[in-house]
Amino acid sequence: MEILRTVDELRAWSRAAHKSDKTVGLVPTMGALHQGHASLIRAAAASCGATAVTVFVNPTQFGPNEDFARYPRTFDADCTLAQAQGADVTFAPAVDEIYPEGAATFVEVEDIGDRLDGVSRPKHFRGVSTVVAKLFIATEADLAFFGQKDAAQVAILRRMTTDLRLATKIVVCPIVREPDGLALSSRNVYLTSSQRIQALALCRAIGVAESLVGHGQRTAAILMEAAHAVFGAEPAIRVDYISVVDWSTLLPVETAAPGTLFAVAAWVGNTRLIDNTILS
Ligand code: PAF
Image (tube, rainbow, N blue to C red):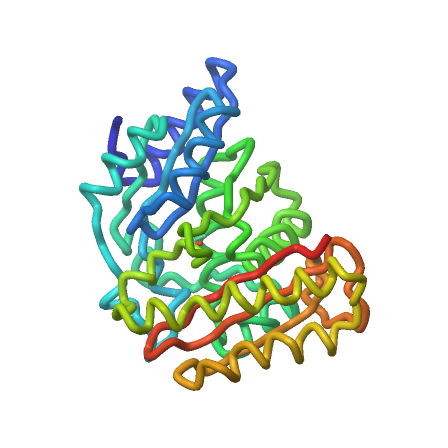
C-alpha cells in the first residue's frame, strides 16, 4: 500500500483510478484506527475499485483546550490495519499541506453546525467540513464512508455536499461496539479501567431509549428523562447533551418518529464520549 503525502499525489492517484474506470472510495480518518474504522475501510474496498484512507489529525476541529496535542497517533499500526482491510493508498499529509501558510478559506455549514456537539465545541464542525471538503475536492471520490457514531458530523457533511453540489456520495456505516456495548472510539484509550465501566452509561442510555420506543413510547421528553435517569446513577459522568432530533436538521423533535436521531454526549473524567441510535 502506497503512502501519499501531498494533495497533488492524492489527486493524481484518484484521476488515474477514474481513468481506469474504477470507483474511488474515500475513508477520512484522524488515525488511531480501530475496528470501527476497519469496518469503513472494508465497506469501501468492497464497493470501490480504488480505496484511499486518509490519516490526518485536523487541528482546526479542536478547540484551544481540547486534546489535539495528546490525540493518539499510531501511524504505523494505522497503515498495517488500512492495508489489511483493503486500502490501496493512505494519504497522510503534513498540516501545511492541508492548510498552506496564510490559509484563510473555511467551509462553514451555518446553524446546523452549531447544534449538538457544535454547542459545546464551537467551530468544531467548521474544521470538519473544511477538511472534508478539501479531501472531496482533491479526490472527487465517488463514495466517502463515515461512521454513524458521528451522526451529527454525517448530517453536516450531507448538508455540505448538497449545498456545494459535490459529486461525492456519503455512505454511513453502523456503529461498531465492544462486546459490552461501548461504542468504539479512538478516545476510549484515555479511559482508566473504572472510567471504562462508567462509560457504559452512554450505551445503557441509548438502550433504555430504544427499549421505550420498542414499547410504543415516542414522546421525546420521556425518552430524554429516562436517559437522564441512567446518567443520574453514574455521578462521575457529566452529561453534555441528551437530544432527540431530526437527523437531517439536528433540530429537536417532540415525537420520535422512525428515523429520529437519539444522541448523547458525556464527559467521563476528561474524556468526552458520544453515542447514538437511529430510532426505529
Ligand atoms: O470523524 C473523524 O475522524 C474526523 O472528524 C474526520 C471526518 C476525519 C475529519 O477530520
